[in-house]
Image (cartoon, rainbow, N blue to C red; front, side, top):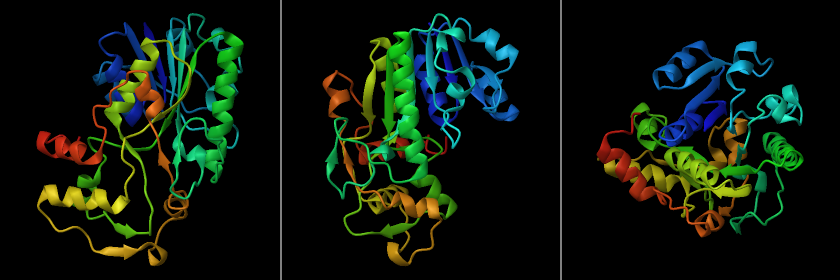
Length: 290
């Protein structure tokens, strides 16, 4: 197995770790030379890729790729890898056997707190989610055209070591915003890596929600993290009067409960299925800072 991860950031690095004991060679791309050096220290063959051009060195190194993970978000001018390579991925990676595309549950749009699964039609609200839907469709079409299974992993809010409520509380940036009946799903980054490996090992394609079991109000996570730290949580703030960036406010415009039953039905076991035990593990292990 030779794994290539386009966009080897927070989730991509967790995926690389999940494949470390089975992949003979792991390549990861990043926009920054400094981040490339960090990936190299983690045993990942790193290349700088800005989305505008695939270097000759990168092209040569990924000729043996059997498994591809695309984690780079699309833009107004489409998915960067598809834009550069087109639909014939085998021209770039002739030995390709499986593709994983990291998407988002944002493609479902707003469902006023109702449960959704992979059978629900997508109704993206934000421009970035519209772009994701187009990228999903393009990757699935590429898989069909090339007879390669493509798994679309729709991820919920990502957290884990170095990115969590403890860090926000320590920095003083945690906010306890209250919006009636608002809930969010979330996912530990390690479970993203494990789910990608699970689908890859079985050569599975299709669409999968990669999310925890328990959608909850965002303020509940802040309160639980503060309890574990032995500190007072920040005061409650009404969402309607809070100062938020347009992007932050847009997240609160979508309210849904996302089911992971499809992935579970295949036999995948989440290591961190709900936020209380996950936060407890982060805090007790001392890994919450990363």
